[in-house]
Amino acid sequence: MFEKTERQAIYVWLYSMKWKRKLQRFGTIYYSSPKMKYVIMYINSDRVAKVKSELKTKKYVKRISMAHRKELDEHFAMKIPEKNSEREE
Image (cartoon, rainbow, N blue to C red):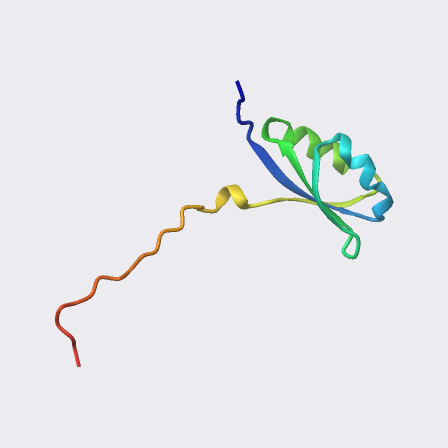
């Protein structure tokens, strides 16, 4: 059956967008911005450290940063304050 694999988003800033196709072998390209010259990629979580260290050695990569989505709490519940029966005026 289908098994869910954990993935990590990674932001890769490039010197030139002509190198975007080279990044396809490292992971799945989700979005690219030609104006700001960056690419958002998704990589399997078990390969993140290896891919990140390999990308740092490439001459066309300016900067790499990780997405912080896993650190955020995605359970949004409305917290309604309890109403006091007595109004203070």
